[in-house]
Length: 279
Image: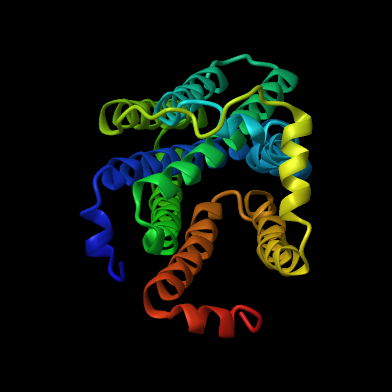
């Protein structure tokens, strides 16, 4: 499998891609509106950054404790419930008068759920596409992230100029509910990939295996460190330019979109191995 056209002819990839687009647009609107709302009420760059990227910290916590759940649930059910949770969280955060501690509790819960959903999604991708299509499938999903972040931040900037952050949060919730419908009716029901009870011990057993070789550790560090530095920069966009943060987010997402497109479509497997270190 060498082209995106072949990829989208694969049954069930299109609904998975469409739902991913809707969810990324939802989380993008949610994060921008929430950071704007929190910064306006607290004047704190730290709290604004935590409100926008708090789910990422919670996903890290979930990945180190709960990720064994991802292999022990039915993929369609898990992804649908994850999208529903995103919609309900958006509606809860849009409620006026919610105290700051309650908002961060919702953010924490959303990140924990998201960590499981990410594991289920990429495990399902491996079942939907043929073995030689996984890299291209990951590239397409990454491109959808970049494209929907561009669209989401642009729309978010417009919405924040026209309506309140709480109304923008409600729109993000509607997009999450749309994703849940696409997942429920666009994917077939599959059994869980593994049996047994999920546990922290099972999660760490797999994590230790994944980190057991120097080559895999190097790949993980190459993915984690640049992304961490990018997020550290993006966390300051709203305090740095409250009225123009959306434009800065669009620029960052546009760069990542072009990078994903180039690596997934135009680099051969040999080229990826050759250029991964200098990149």
